[in-house]
Image (cartoon, rainbow over all chains, first blue to last red):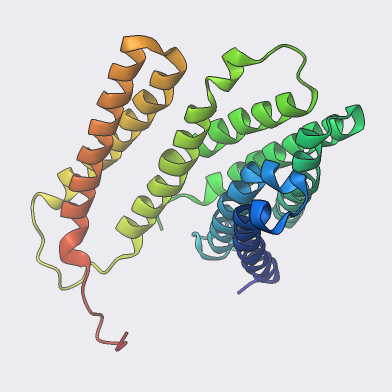
Length: 139
Length: 129
């Protein structure tokens, strides 16, 4: 298993725990009188699981298991693969912190950080497609 | 393609939440399409494609229906995603009809996929689990 895949899978497991924890905290927020920002964390809960856990696990396993690009570069461009990983996780992390905050207390700087998070995740999607497209082929 | 389209819609929605100035009602009508493209068009389709690639083939009785069923699953799934993604954005009775047709196509895809894969779900002889 290549190092990048190990990073993908370990961060996917962290996001699984964080996602389930967020769901539990959202459910407990009214009873335990937790911060109001948690009531705005619904999209964060969904995206921790769907992007941080499932998509990240798919990206990591696909990078590892899909047919080789070529003998010289079996997994394509290393720089593109690392950039995809970093952009996906930076984008998600910024979103997780900023989105509930911005929904409860909107601010210009937080708004632009959210737009930056969107750009990072979109670029990660583009990077994954560019890296994987030549590897979807017959033997 | 679905991943890219779904990520693009999602990024536009998140960016609008951050810095959008107009009310964005028109953009947010595409939120169901964002979900549909990523959950069904990307994740379900990837699982189906990889399963058809990876599952055991050797020693399986070759049904003449398996290959057409797999292609039917592929065609129906993608037609279903397209219809179910655009229906809610268009709204009205026409949109609801498109959504219903999309769901019907997706059910057809699931049935065809199950028929294609069913005989290939078998023990390998290598593992007890």
